[in-house]
Amino acid sequence: MGDQGKALAEGLYWMAEKLMWGYEDTDINPVEAFRVYKRAADLRFSDALIRVGELQEHGKGTEQSAAEALVSYQRAAKAGDFLAYAYIGKLLTRTQHAGKADRSWSKFFAILVLNPKHEFVADTPGGLIHDYIESQLRLGVEPNYIQTIRQFRNDVVTRNQQLLEHASSPNRLERIGAVTDWLIANLRDE
Image: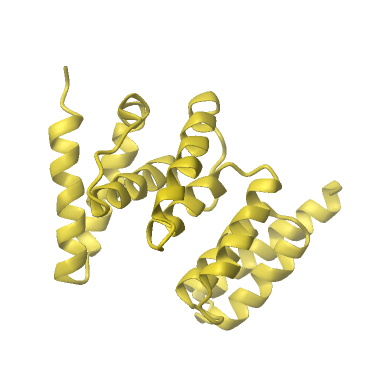
C-alpha cells in the first residue's frame, strides 16, 4: 500500500474509533463504526482488521461470529501485525479450541520480546499481557512468559488498576481479582 493508501486507511480507522467510542463529541454508532473499520480493513490496515475482528467476536455493530473474528485476526497477522496473535489466543481460550491458543500466545510473546517498542494502536502490551494472564487463570493454567511479563510489569499493573476501577459485575471483579493475586505473587521485586 502506498503512502496515500495508508493515509486514507489510517484516517478511516480513526473516524471509526470516534464512532465506536464517541470521541470529540461524535455520537456513538457501532454499526457505522463497523462499516468504516471494514473500509480501512479492505485497504489492509491491520489495526482495522483487529477492530473488525473484535466487533465480530462480541457482536457489536454486526452479527456475533467467532469464526469471522478469527478470519479477521488471521488477516491482521498475515498483514504483519503480531498483536493479532494475542487476539487469536484470547478468542481461542473462550472456545472449545482453547488448547490451540498456546501456539498463538507463544508467537505473540516471541515477537514482543524482539520488538518491545512496537507502536501499538489497537491495544497496549500491558493490556494484551493482562488478557493472557486472565485467560490462563480462567483455564486453570499457570501463566508462562514470566520474564516478559516482568519486563512489562508497569503496563500490566496499570491495566489491572484500570480494569478494577471500571469492573461492572461481581464476576468480572472476581476474574480481575484473580489476576491481581497472581501479579502480587509473581511480580514482587526479587
